[in-house]
Length: 96
Image (cartoon, rainbow, N blue to C red; front, top):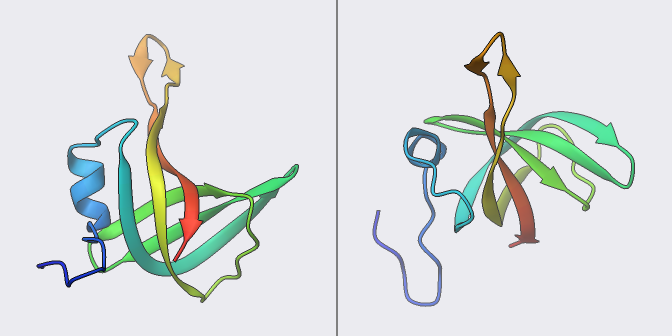
């Protein structure tokens, strides 16, 4: 998919999850599936045709909503019985 003038290139969720550029900004677009409230923020599951990823945000969002975001790729390390079970997630910076 080529970028249009003035519109940032949007990655697929599968592209981000297959080779996560930890700490880099990415643009994603998809549909909100689940929302999990947290203190002063929430996590939501963002799904596109290629897969899904969790997104951390301070901006309210509802299941079924379509969003385009700019976010930073993060990784939360979780070790279970000596094996890495961590998860890639996106820290939302802007809702576009």
